[in-house]
Structures are given as C-alpha cells and as structure tokens.
Image (cartoon, rainbow, N blue to C red):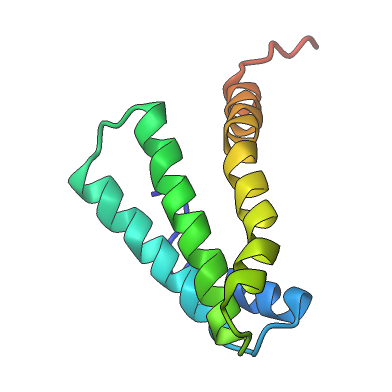
Length: 116
C-alpha cells in the first residue's frame, strides 16, 4: 500500500489529540483500518472505483460508530441521528477527494523540461 502499516499510530495519535477522544482509541482504530486496507489490497488487487467506494463507506461508518462507542457515548436513536450526517457527508465526499488525490498524483508524475 501507499502507507506503511505503522502509520496508524501517528495518524491515530493526531486524531486523538485533535478530536478529544480517549487517548488510544483512534490509534487502535487507525491501525485496524490500515490493516484491513492492506488485507483487502492483498486479496483484491484489481478493483474498480465502485468497490473502493463501498469499502471506504463501510470503513468510514464503522470507524465513526466505533469511535462513538469508545468515547463512552450512549448509542441510541438520538446518537445515531447525530452521527448520521457525519457518516453521510463522509461517504459523499469520497469521490471528490479521490479525484483530487488522482489529480495531485498525475501532477506529481508529470515530467517538466528544465531549460538552462
């Protein structure tokens, strides 16, 4: 993959410090998410965008729900209603962010001619 598996620790630490979650919850969730991505990339190396989108949606929703559980919040109907817009917004933003990343990757790989 693009990121090494150990990258979940610093990314999760930053997430914990920024979000105010109990320290270690995002470290665990980021690490598990990266391990799941590595496993999926190993099992399904050639995927299409729709499958990537569905996998990202499943991981985003599970991450949001597990983070809410680790925070000690009661997960009832009001909690799910509060988490719903965040999950929906995250799922709808995936194609836009994927296009931005693809554009930046194409820009990174563009060859430029150096004129002396």
